[in-house]
Image (cartoon, rainbow, N blue to C red; front, side):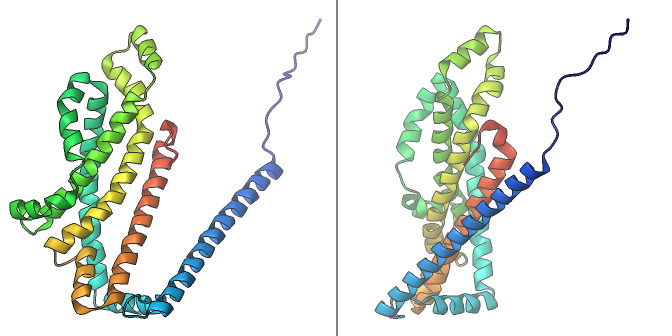
Length: 278
């Protein structure tokens, strides 16, 4: 007797129509988002134009005057040099703040004695704004790059540390006990449970630190710099060029938007398995 066996398990075959519909929906959502962004920008520019018409160019530069001033500053290299100088200072200081703040936050959240030793200093210094240290930074480090980088580092490191430690302490105790009961060492618990759960907090801290770094760079460059967007804004005041001031302010906003978007996209693509959905 011959026994014939057949595999009754259905084989999943890709449905071209479903894939096409998903692609179409994604395209529609993308176009809708772009359309809303464009509409928002156009409304903002229209309001800006109305305000400029009401108060005059001596107080508020119009969009056309700002674009013209941007072209003027770009043609002689002032705008490009300012963007490069400010970006370099922000990225170095912010990067150092993330590199130092994340490990310190892990230690503070994970080890009680480290938290007890460092918490008084963290709670004390994080309430002192970086602007208060501008004069000391210039006296101690000079008017070169070091003073600006250190101020931005000071801005970023406490934000990243606090967010990271909050992420560590938010890990549920049952997970830690379960891992310990299965024989996991402290290092394995840190690598396999604590760190993956803390990644979204680290990314959020990095984004907040980036925003605060832009706040710090302006005050630092006003006091001790000849090149940079903060210096450009201050120098424009001396020449009575309101349109240059608007160029500097808008450039800061655009740079911040771009850097934050790059950080978000990078975090989602590289750290998505850890729940980085910012």
